[in-house]
Image (cartoon, rainbow, N blue to C red; front, side, top):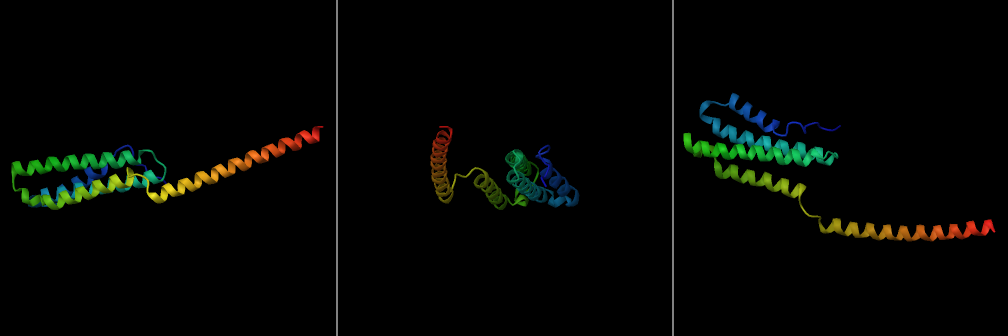
Length: 152
């Protein structure tokens, strides 16, 4: 079963942000909003991973767009808290660390180079493929020889 989510890659973080604004009290809105944006970005990454590993080409797009929109919104919220009130409510050092974790996770999950184990498996696979090709060629030659013998 494939998760259909490619039409609105920003939907999850927007929904979590809206829920945070609705259910939090007025004093905790910046903190709740920043945490909900992070949660929405993580959910986008999760949905993108599920889609990507199920063969959907939009999986990477979903994850990257979702995290980009949520992180951009968090940065705007960060600047807004300096303008209108107390920026300490946002817990910026902790939230920045979590954003770094999510960004690193998406980078290493989607964009990391192949590991040494994968390279060794590819080399073994290529060697087996070459052996199979040589065997097929030898069998084709034998078949040609047999077919020429039966015709004559």
